[in-house]
Length: 208
Image 1 (tube, helix red, strand yellow):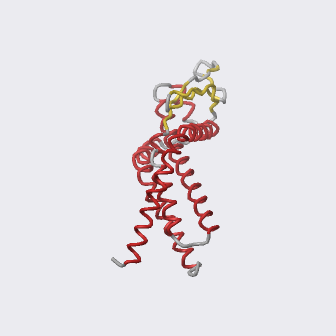
Image 2 (cartoon, helix red, strand yellow; image 1 turned 120 degrees about the horizontal axis):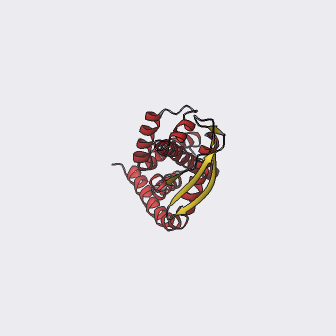
Image 3 (spheres, helix red, strand yellow; image 1 turned 60 degrees about the horizontal axis):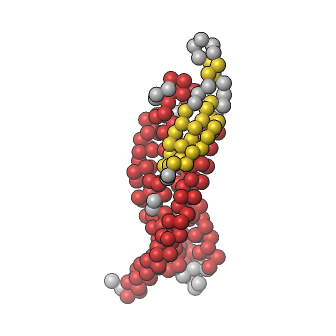
Protein backbone atom coordinates (compact mmCIF):
# COMPACT_ATOMS: atom_id res chain seq x y z
CA UNK A 1 0.00 0.00 0.00
CA UNK A 2 1.37 3.40 -1.00
CA UNK A 3 2.37 5.68 1.94
CA UNK A 4 0.02 8.47 0.79
CA UNK A 5 -3.00 6.13 0.64
CA UNK A 6 -2.06 4.60 4.00
CA UNK A 7 -1.77 8.06 5.56
CA UNK A 8 -5.16 9.10 4.15
CA UNK A 9 -6.84 6.00 5.56
CA UNK A 10 -5.18 6.57 8.94
CA UNK A 11 -6.33 10.21 8.93
CA UNK A 12 -9.93 9.18 8.19
CA UNK A 13 -9.80 6.57 10.95
CA UNK A 14 -8.43 9.02 13.53
CA UNK A 15 -10.93 11.71 12.56
CA UNK A 16 -13.68 9.09 12.88
CA UNK A 17 -12.62 8.03 16.38
CA UNK A 18 -12.40 11.62 17.62
CA UNK A 19 -15.71 12.61 15.97
CA UNK A 20 -17.52 9.55 17.34
CA UNK A 21 -16.18 10.19 20.86
CA UNK A 22 -17.48 13.76 20.71
CA UNK A 23 -20.82 13.04 19.02
CA UNK A 24 -21.94 10.03 21.06
CA UNK A 25 -22.36 11.83 24.44
CA UNK A 26 -24.13 14.71 22.71
CA UNK A 27 -26.43 12.32 20.85
CA UNK A 28 -27.33 10.56 24.10
CA UNK A 29 -28.53 13.94 25.39
CA UNK A 30 -30.58 14.98 22.36
CA UNK A 31 -31.71 11.71 20.74
CA UNK A 32 -35.00 11.57 22.66
CA UNK A 33 -35.87 15.13 21.65
CA UNK A 34 -34.89 14.42 18.03
CA UNK A 35 -36.87 11.18 17.90
CA UNK A 36 -40.00 12.75 19.41
CA UNK A 37 -39.77 15.76 17.09
CA UNK A 38 -39.27 13.54 14.06
CA UNK A 39 -42.17 11.30 15.03
CA UNK A 40 -44.50 14.27 15.54
CA UNK A 41 -43.59 15.76 12.17
CA UNK A 42 -44.12 12.49 10.33
CA UNK A 43 -47.41 11.57 11.99
CA UNK A 44 -48.81 15.05 11.45
CA UNK A 45 -47.93 14.73 7.76
CA UNK A 46 -49.70 11.36 7.59
CA UNK A 47 -52.71 12.71 9.51
CA UNK A 48 -52.99 15.65 7.14
CA UNK A 49 -52.74 13.40 4.09
CA UNK A 50 -55.32 10.88 5.29
CA UNK A 51 -57.72 13.35 6.92
CA UNK A 52 -57.16 12.42 10.54
CA UNK A 53 -57.40 14.73 13.54
CA UNK A 54 -54.92 14.12 16.35
CA UNK A 55 -56.78 14.37 19.65
CA UNK A 56 -54.00 13.45 22.06
CA UNK A 57 -50.27 12.78 22.08
CA UNK A 58 -48.89 10.70 24.90
CA UNK A 59 -45.17 10.06 25.45
CA UNK A 60 -44.53 6.64 26.91
CA UNK A 61 -40.81 6.17 27.56
CA UNK A 62 -39.22 6.17 24.08
CA UNK A 63 -42.52 5.65 22.28
CA UNK A 64 -45.22 8.12 21.32
CA UNK A 65 -48.89 7.14 21.35
CA UNK A 66 -51.09 9.17 18.99
CA UNK A 67 -54.84 9.17 19.55
CA UNK A 68 -56.85 10.38 16.57
CA UNK A 69 -60.25 10.51 14.92
CA UNK A 70 -61.61 11.10 11.45
CA UNK A 71 -61.60 14.68 10.15
CA UNK A 72 -64.12 13.90 7.40
CA UNK A 73 -67.61 12.84 8.59
CA UNK A 74 -68.66 9.31 7.65
CA UNK A 75 -71.90 7.39 7.91
CA UNK A 76 -72.46 3.71 8.63
CA UNK A 77 -74.86 1.41 6.79
CA UNK A 78 -77.74 2.73 8.91
CA UNK A 79 -76.97 6.28 7.80
CA UNK A 80 -75.72 7.27 11.25
CA UNK A 81 -72.80 9.63 11.69
CA UNK A 82 -69.82 7.79 13.15
CA UNK A 83 -66.62 8.99 14.76
CA UNK A 84 -63.52 6.83 14.61
CA UNK A 85 -61.46 6.78 17.80
CA UNK A 86 -58.17 4.98 17.37
CA UNK A 87 -54.55 5.18 18.39
CA UNK A 88 -51.15 4.05 17.14
CA UNK A 89 -47.80 3.69 18.87
CA UNK A 90 -44.62 4.75 17.08
CA UNK A 91 -41.02 4.20 18.08
CA UNK A 92 -38.21 5.95 16.19
CA UNK A 93 -35.26 4.24 17.84
CA UNK A 94 -34.88 1.59 15.14
CA UNK A 95 -34.70 4.35 12.52
CA UNK A 96 -32.16 6.68 14.15
CA UNK A 97 -29.89 4.45 16.26
CA UNK A 98 -26.99 4.76 13.79
CA UNK A 99 -26.88 8.57 13.75
CA UNK A 100 -23.63 8.90 15.81
CA UNK A 101 -21.70 6.56 13.49
CA UNK A 102 -23.15 8.25 10.40
CA UNK A 103 -22.25 11.76 11.55
CA UNK A 104 -18.78 10.66 12.70
CA UNK A 105 -18.09 9.08 9.31
CA UNK A 106 -19.42 12.18 7.57
CA UNK A 107 -17.10 14.49 9.55
CA UNK A 108 -14.12 12.15 9.21
CA UNK A 109 -14.37 12.02 5.42
CA UNK A 110 -15.04 15.74 5.09
CA UNK A 111 -12.21 16.99 7.32
CA UNK A 112 -9.63 14.53 6.01
CA UNK A 113 -9.98 15.84 2.43
CA UNK A 114 -8.39 19.05 1.20
CA UNK A 115 -11.15 21.36 0.01
CA UNK A 116 -12.30 24.97 0.57
CA UNK A 117 -13.84 25.45 4.02
CA UNK A 118 -17.10 26.80 2.60
CA UNK A 119 -17.44 23.74 0.39
CA UNK A 120 -16.90 21.47 3.36
CA UNK A 121 -19.49 23.29 5.49
CA UNK A 122 -21.99 23.20 2.63
CA UNK A 123 -21.38 19.47 2.15
CA UNK A 124 -21.89 18.77 5.86
CA UNK A 125 -25.16 20.74 5.86
CA UNK A 126 -26.40 19.01 2.71
CA UNK A 127 -25.48 15.57 4.07
CA UNK A 128 -27.29 16.21 7.36
CA UNK A 129 -30.37 17.34 5.42
CA UNK A 130 -30.25 14.13 3.36
CA UNK A 131 -29.95 12.12 6.56
CA UNK A 132 -32.99 13.88 8.03
CA UNK A 133 -35.00 13.28 4.84
CA UNK A 134 -34.04 9.60 4.92
CA UNK A 135 -35.37 9.40 8.48
CA UNK A 136 -38.59 11.19 7.48
CA UNK A 137 -39.24 8.89 4.49
CA UNK A 138 -38.43 5.75 6.48
CA UNK A 139 -40.64 6.70 9.42
CA UNK A 140 -43.44 7.89 7.11
CA UNK A 141 -43.64 4.48 5.42
CA UNK A 142 -43.52 2.75 8.81
CA UNK A 143 -46.32 5.06 10.01
CA UNK A 144 -48.49 4.13 7.01
CA UNK A 145 -47.85 0.46 7.70
CA UNK A 146 -48.85 0.96 11.36
CA UNK A 147 -52.04 2.78 10.36
CA UNK A 148 -53.01 0.01 7.96
CA UNK A 149 -52.41 -2.59 10.67
CA UNK A 150 -54.59 -0.62 13.10
CA UNK A 151 -57.38 -0.59 10.52
CA UNK A 152 -57.48 -4.40 10.41
CA UNK A 153 -59.26 -4.49 13.78
CA UNK A 154 -61.76 -1.74 12.90
CA UNK A 155 -64.19 -1.97 10.00
CA UNK A 156 -64.84 1.78 10.12
CA UNK A 157 -61.12 2.60 10.10
CA UNK A 158 -60.60 0.12 7.27
CA UNK A 159 -63.37 1.78 5.24
CA UNK A 160 -62.09 5.27 6.04
CA UNK A 161 -58.50 4.62 4.95
CA UNK A 162 -59.59 2.70 1.86
CA UNK A 163 -60.94 5.93 0.41
CA UNK A 164 -57.30 6.56 -0.44
CA UNK A 165 -55.02 4.47 -2.62
CA UNK A 166 -52.97 2.37 -0.20
CA UNK A 167 -50.98 -0.46 -1.82
CA UNK A 168 -50.87 -2.61 1.29
CA UNK A 169 -48.35 -5.24 0.28
CA UNK A 170 -45.98 -2.65 -1.15
CA UNK A 171 -46.20 -0.50 2.00
CA UNK A 172 -45.74 -3.50 4.32
CA UNK A 173 -42.75 -4.83 2.34
CA UNK A 174 -41.13 -1.41 2.02
CA UNK A 175 -41.64 -0.68 5.72
CA UNK A 176 -40.10 -4.03 6.62
CA UNK A 177 -37.05 -3.41 4.40
CA UNK A 178 -36.55 0.16 5.62
CA UNK A 179 -37.04 -0.80 9.27
CA UNK A 180 -34.52 -3.64 8.94
CA UNK A 181 -31.85 -2.15 6.71
CA UNK A 182 -32.15 1.65 6.23
CA UNK A 183 -30.53 2.62 9.53
CA UNK A 184 -27.86 -0.07 9.20
CA UNK A 185 -26.79 1.03 5.73
CA UNK A 186 -27.22 4.80 6.15
CA UNK A 187 -23.56 5.39 7.19
CA UNK A 188 -22.30 3.68 4.04
CA UNK A 189 -24.83 5.34 1.74
CA UNK A 190 -24.00 8.77 3.11
CA UNK A 191 -20.27 7.98 3.00
CA UNK A 192 -20.53 7.15 -0.72
CA UNK A 193 -22.34 10.44 -1.35
CA UNK A 194 -19.78 12.44 0.65
CA UNK A 195 -16.79 10.70 -0.95
CA UNK A 196 -18.17 11.22 -4.47
CA UNK A 197 -18.86 14.91 -3.76
CA UNK A 198 -15.40 15.42 -2.25
CA UNK A 199 -13.80 13.84 -5.29
CA UNK A 200 -15.68 16.32 -7.48
CA UNK A 201 -14.52 19.22 -5.30
CA UNK A 202 -10.94 17.89 -5.35
CA UNK A 203 -10.93 17.71 -9.13
CA UNK A 204 -12.41 21.20 -9.37
CA UNK A 205 -9.98 22.74 -6.85
CA UNK A 206 -6.80 20.64 -7.22
CA UNK A 207 -4.62 23.32 -5.66
CA UNK A 208 -6.81 23.94 -2.56
